[in-house]
Image (tube, rainbow, N blue to C red):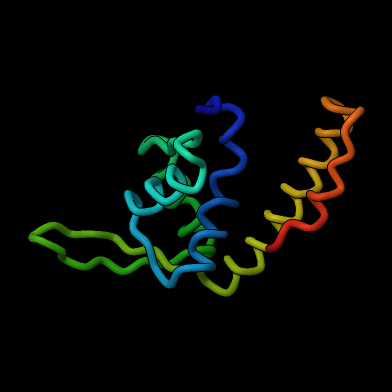
Length: 119
């Protein structure tokens, strides 16, 4: 599992990327998908995920719709057009950051493959 400090700046990129690939998701579903895709190395805690979802919603990057499922209200999140643009910017910035960090931390390795990551 990665540290909270390391993950803090990447939550919105992960959420926007997931929601750009799937029509809608609720919070727990997002956290489980991240856990699955990261082979259990990234665990989004409620105290990190839900404030991020709230901020992205207030920033106009996400919208939501509440539905009752099994007697419980579930909040489904959707990515907006602004969110799609922001997702591209986040992914590009993260890709560039990873390349830059690799030059500092692993100067002996060439990580040109980061340039081939899909958005």
